[in-house]
Amino acid sequence: MTMKLSFNTWPYASFPVWLPAYPLEEVIKRIAAIGYDGIEIGAASPHAYPPTLSTERRVNIKKILEHYGLEVSSMLPALSGGPGHNVASPIPEERRHTIEHYKEVIELCAYWGGKTVLYIPGWQIFGTSRKQAWEWSREALREISKTALDYGVTMVIEPTPFDSNLVDRCDDAIELMEEVNKPNVKLMFDTFHALHRKEVSTDYVYSMGENLHHIHISDNDRLAPGQGRGDFVSLISALKDINYDGYLAMELGFDRRDIEPDNVARQAFEYLKPLVDEANKSLLIKSK
Image (tube, rainbow, N blue to C red; front, top):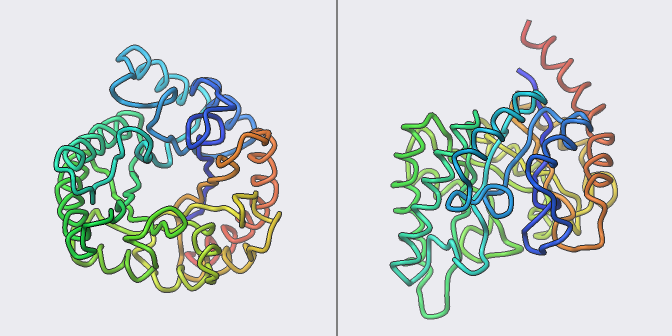
C-alpha cells in the first residue's frame, strides 16, 4: 500500500489556454525525467482527443509510456470549450455526445494501462432545474460506468465548485455516488476546489474515507503545493490515516500562459516527494 505521484498534462497544452503546447510524446519524457510515477492525461488535442488520435499514435504513445516506465494514473475528458462535454446539458445531442466521449476516453485509458477516469458531473444551465440537471448527470454516469466496468476502469466523481454549479461540495459527490450505486463509481477531490470553498482538505479525506480513489493536488491559485496557503503536511497525514494507496495527481498552473510547466512540475514533486515517502514508510510498517 503506497501513495504515488502523478502529473496532469494540462499545463503542457490545451486547457483552458493553448500555450505552452508540447506533443504528448514530449510531455511523457519530461514528466518521467522529473521522477513522477504516473501521468494524468487530459483527453484533448493535441494530446489525446480520441477522434483525432490515430491508431499509429495510440500504439506509439503506449510504447513511449512503457519505455519511460510511466503509468497512466488516470485520464479525464476534454473539458468545456466548443463541444461542451456537459452531461447535464438541456441539449440531448450534447448529452449523448458527451457520454460517447467518455466511453472513448475509457477505452483509450484502458489501452494505455490506466484504470481511473474522472467524471465531471456537468453544470446546470439557465432554464433547467437543478433536479433535472442532476438526473441527467446521474443517468449518464450509470451508463458510462457500465462501459467502464467492461474495461476494468473506475469512474471517480469530482466536485468542481470553482468551475461549475451542480456537484459543488464533498457531500454532493457522495450523494451522487450513492445514487448511482455501482462498484466502480468512487470519489475524488481537488485541493484547489476545497481551498476555493474555504474548506479544509483533510475534511474531504475523512468524509470520503474508503471511497476516496483519486486526488488532484493544487495550492490556491493553481500554484504548486507549498507555494500558497494549503496545508499539505496535514493532508498527507490524513491520507495515511485512511490507508490511502492511490495517486496524488498534480493539476497545476494550467489556467494561464505565464508559467514554466517543467518548473511547476518540479516544484510540486520536490515538495511532496519527501512527505509521501515518509508516509509510505509508515504505511508499510503498519501493514506488517
